[in-house]
Image (tube, helix red, strand yellow):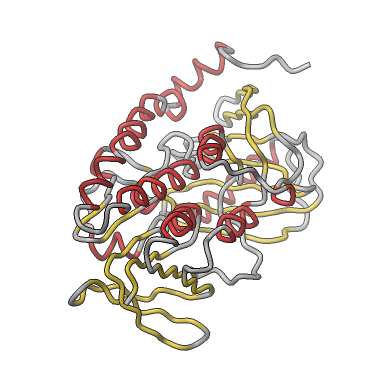
Length: 349
């Protein structure tokens, strides 16, 4: 019997396991193969909030995680009107798979880590929870006293133990990598209500063009194809496709979007609904919520649910405040007015 079982070893799960490893008997179950090429279906940029989260832990990035080019501006494209502006931003361009593996490498050896292991089911049993895990073609069952869902959107733990209160929106993120694009090496945010009511992106990484977006679940593949067609009309050229990725993405609406803790079941990161409704940035919230749950568990399992829920109040309020930005980014008329004003934009030489 383990004290704590963590499903998922992204930034939230890895941060929690690293901080708990010396105090509790911890089991981590992660579906990714240790040596497989892996890229989270996102831009793979470390925004200022995520940089701040790393700084709080006194962590510095290894050089081999970084990729070129490094980015000092975002190219904002409105395909509907059309309009284009550049805005100063400070991102760290990185290899997301290597970043996640680096965070996992910081977990102490006292933690039991099952990689390439799929958690098939979780259920309550006497004294805690039972996790049914498939690894290497075999099925195993593990007992844990407390369970943490760190498995992102579509979290198994969330579906099993936290009733859906509504408010959270679900999108399908699709992303493709291409060789040999010669466009200007900027991160681009792309908006078009015909494609999605969220946003799309392009970014360069080590000579490859990454193009992706978050789409309503209905006709997501067709919407992605439409994005590429419209980008080609804007001058983008797609070379040989290297790989394609996809995943489910949460986008919080109101307070009912968030779920934190209940009867020794806990959620961290995107599984808890902690992801920006405006930018879909989630790395900072993943690491911060992992840290806050570790602190809530320091005095013991008893009362940890109340402590954790209280400690995440700032995250939840901060995410709700980001809804103030949403109309200016996603309502076509307001976005048009902001972009035409040139407010806070960079004049490109």
